[in-house]
Image (cartoon, rainbow, N blue to C red; front, side, top):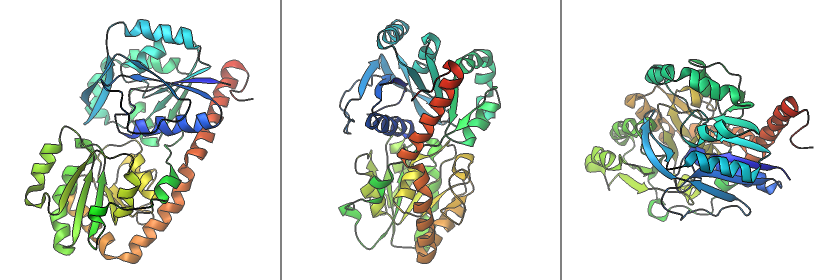
Amino acid sequence: MRKIGIVSEYFYPHLGGVTEHVYYFSKEMLRRGFEIVLLTGYEGQEKIDVELPPGLRIIRFGKSVPIFSNHSFAKVTLGWNLAKKVKRVLAEEKFDLLHVHSPVMPVLPGLFQKYTNTVTIGTFHTYFDAMDSKFFYWALQSTVQKYLDKLDGKIAVGSSCIEAMDAFFKADYTIIPNGVATDWFAQADKKIAAYDDSDKNILFLGRLDPRNGLDTLLDAFPSVLEKVPDARLMVAGDGPLREYYEKKSGDLLGKKVFFEGQVNGNRPEYFATCDAFCFPATKAGFSITILEAMAAGKPIITTDTFGFRDVIRNGENGLLVPQGDSAELGKALVKVLQKKDFAAKLSKNAQSDVQQYSWSQVTDRVIDYYNQVFMKKKGVPFVS
């Protein structure tokens, strides 16, 4: 049985796309008989509000602390003797393969890449604006390039991630997208009772970061109410900017705009309750929440960004609007809420398209890639 070490700065109780990716991929690999060890930071609390898959071992390092980066709140692991502990774990575990998520980001990804001698794969999740990041990456270009060159294989979840990296570094990538638990979101057996009425519910779900575009949605919502007075906005997610967004909601807070805080295990119920899903993010490599809405069969309104163009066919399985354009966002929301046949078409096409992103199919592609890399590196496949 092959043993895989998965390195990620993100895991529960932190919520987000990389956490979801790591959790569901690990779950599927364990189901197939692989041994999985998750290598991540310690957040100061061990309570995890999800059922971990049987057999998943977690080794935590240092202290995971938040930082503000790329218009979002990221995580890095700090602590004494981190390098020593990383080397000890690598020596003791003797992984057949190391899979590092967000490999050019500090701290754990860099330490594991530095000290490992086994076959190493990196998955790139993030899109960033080259101009915003130019001084950071120019200053560290040669160092980061060395870490890239040491990777035996490089996966990008979308073309936008490759475009961002290509502005500074030389590397070859294979695109393997994020996955989604299609059945879980398609078969929600109940709705959120407080909002299960005749009103038309718009759902925003994501961290309350500047990059996720809640500002634009809150600016657009009054124009939606002018055309659809029985509309309601559910904001599912949390973050340091929650108070700011609540104040921005003004008199609509608690009447037409409702902040639900952090949600996780009942996400399918929130999708089942909504009439439209809106995620007007300005930066995204490949949003898992978009896939979740597709799996739930909901019409999607999002922004015309690199990451979303990989998934959304404008006017066919969702709507794309210009970034930061609250007027166009409002018009798109009104269209979906008022035109039932059009909304039904978007939903049906989305639910059909999302099947290619099931975790079973995505994991097949990752294992195929493992085999390719192992054949090139060692002359044998990873799975015989």
